[in-house]
Image 1 (tube, rainbow, N blue to C red):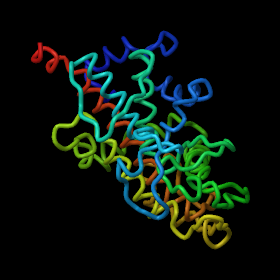
Image 2 (tube, helix red, strand yellow):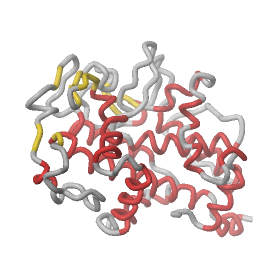
Image 3 (tube, rainbow, N blue to C red):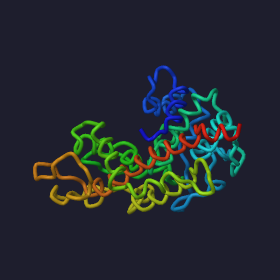
Image 4 (cartoon, rainbow, N blue to C red):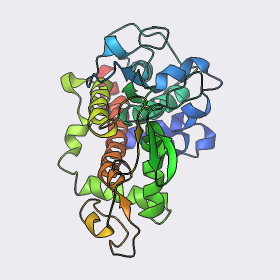
Length: 309
């Protein structure tokens, strides 16, 4: 619903028939094909040096073999460039040379949609030899949070999995009645109301850029330092009194705007870590969606195309 008429028409034209006109239905496609497109594995993430709470493209955007531009921000630049070249005759300048290309524009769109989601995740998917899944934007030394053990509601897991999956799953189950659509509606209401003054700044890129993934990655690594990695070091275990310190449900009031659940004593106790981090996760989901729409709107702007013609 955040797409312009032109962008929506072009997106539907590019989507495969199996998507039935819904971009959301193919946003996980890049994960589904990573076993077939082995070269795409490093494009899902970016790692910074340990406890360097900043991101620099030419320092950090490379795969484990040191090949430049093979990271999530490089992939976003690449697929944006390919789609712009096809639809606007425009070729943005990259910070470093980048050579990966998809088979067709449909795949370029699906890669772009997925990777804009990935770069907004404080923790996400990294494919490494042991099939571990570290933070999408995290540290090299701990494999993106995989060597940091936590206990999440009596379940032993790692820091990456908490941020990649469990915070969202816990929210859907406990706060949104096991209904993902209800969570989505709550986030959309926050976009309209609580975050309405910020939306225009989320959309914009400086210097008339079409996409600015370096900004998105910088935000994610700062949040990883401040919220995900806080009180955690590689090899450490976060247990009771830290990750799992609980708080009475009456303390939840005001922490989660537009929650569909009544904040009464009938609601189970929640973990303080979960409560304080969920608003961050939900806001990053909102930013990723708004920015993806903004990029596609700029990309598939018929007025620009006509002016260039």
